[in-house]
Image 1 (tube, each protein chain N blue to C red):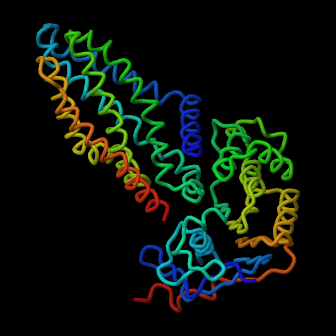
Image 2 (image 1 turned 180 degrees about the horizontal axis):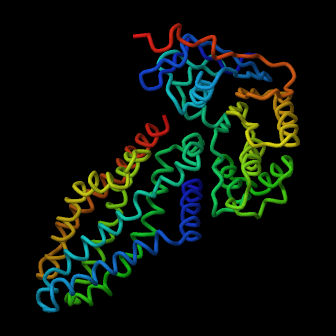
Length: 221
Length: 215
């Protein structure tokens, strides 16, 4: 546990010193959402209707934006070899890196989502469900994305390959998240959608680090 | 006492056999010097010893116990220094070193890291961010990992690259101290290092008979 937190703290400090990755993901999210009223037109009813989908797709793309850097810097400077050789299991190290990625990119998205929802004229009644859904969906996106990032590590043009590999896998998360918010807005219970989303997260939490560690080991051979 | 042995190792990179039928034995206090032309598999053998690479065939054993039985234990008893120095540009030398030291043993990681830097003559770099280091300074900072947390097996892949004479002498002294304490070292080098009594392993002896013609 102490080692997990040491790994998370290291990645957080690196992210804060470099700063750009976290800020880029958040700015991308904000700009992406802001573009929609310009494209779709300022009709409040239409914006309110598409708000959940726009917020979710923008969050998904923003989370993907910094994903290809997740292991790349450590791979290039040799830190990944040392992580693989440290007494800490590589699965734990992978989980720590995903957790740090979520704290740096996912958490700011969750916090800024209600503000952007106001911009899209989403009814305030849905804000609670929106935040709750994102709390389940963004860690799921980080976990699935990390598997893609580890698989494309070292591949030429891995940055272009990653979205092709990962975006189809994001579809279930997107469906249940959007369903949950829509249900909340329609006055129905979002519970079944959130439970399914939670189930996906509960599955990905132990499985994704295993897959990431296996892919990282293969990339080091 | 023989600590670390490998028997009948074959290494395959891509479709090419790099070496075949290789045996080695590394006793406590021993030093195995790997030599051979470029591409003869020195780095591959060290990576196999570290467990980063799986041998195509053959087995490795630590005090007679096959590594495959307990790969986790093997990682905690070795230090590996490869071609890359793992110095983070955004971290100071001390931060990088204390992190790696702390992953092995969190107790007093910072103090032990400072002591290790001093022993390699780079204590003055402790608070300097990695991005300002020269290649030789990075290598010294990386080698300090060996001293900051003790481990019985050192695997050094051309450790003298970018080091000046004074640093090579320091490294030779630390290797001697490590061996005197019962540790084992396997290293590859193209340089004449004064290492006392060593065992040599010429990788060229284990190259396949006719390169490119084997099936």
